[in-house]
Amino acid sequence: MVTLGIDLAAEPRNTGGCEIEWRDGGAAVRWVSTDLRDEDVLERAREADMVGIDAPFGWPTSFVDAVTAHHSGRAWPIDSWSSDNRRKLRLRVTDERVHAVTGITPLSVSSDAIAIPATRCALLLHRLGVRDRAADARVREVYPAAALFQWELRHRGYKGQQNSRVLGTLLAGLRKRAPWLVIAAQAARLCATCDDAFDALVASLVARAASEGLTMAPGADEVAAARAEGWIALPDRGSLEKLVPAHRAGSANDAKS
Image (cartoon, rainbow, N blue to C red; front, side):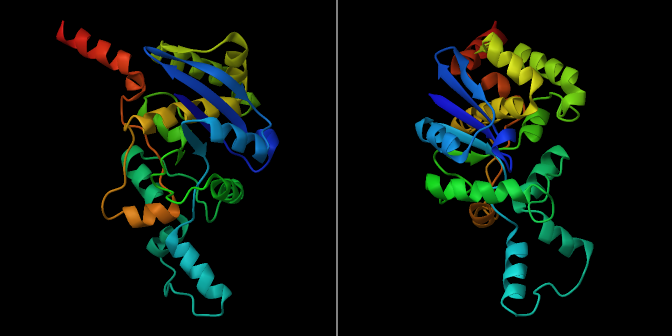
């Protein structure tokens, strides 16, 4: 099995990608890179078994309805400027669930700069044939910061040149928690010095969690919104150690001894 993680940015130069090959008892990073164009992403995605993309897959339904009404000359459908109504315009159902579980509020795809990568992502999803933005068989939305939180690793303050030492320490911590993950020296150097590459690595790990059923699914009352707005594949707590089946079995045997 091969998973692909994409840290999608507005421009290719800040877009990272990471492929992990999974086999009995372990996994290995077989490719990691940055400066990825759309065609690079699509080519890699078509060859992967599961893809995790770090970008919103859609916009809040309330926001889409309101802007559509306004654009066509109809009345703005939200009749009061309250904090609750502003929140409905800013956050998707999945953003609210991630916040409820982790305390982390994802960037707003309707009011923050993350909207620019989201428009690029919409084109890629169309070209990949994604119809269900919540539970596509091969492509899932991921959020590395929330995944790191769920895996009890540092999830803030590791981005940017000024935090390069923190990023290196974070990668070391991740590798210690996942001793079954083989990363060649050159790939490790890139992930330790470039947060775009590191986030792509995390996205690829989350893609594996999604394929193994180790991520949070939408509830019955959230499915309709999730299919339109997108749904963040949030890993279960403690799931990092369970990504390799042999490792899961070994842990269970250890616990019984």
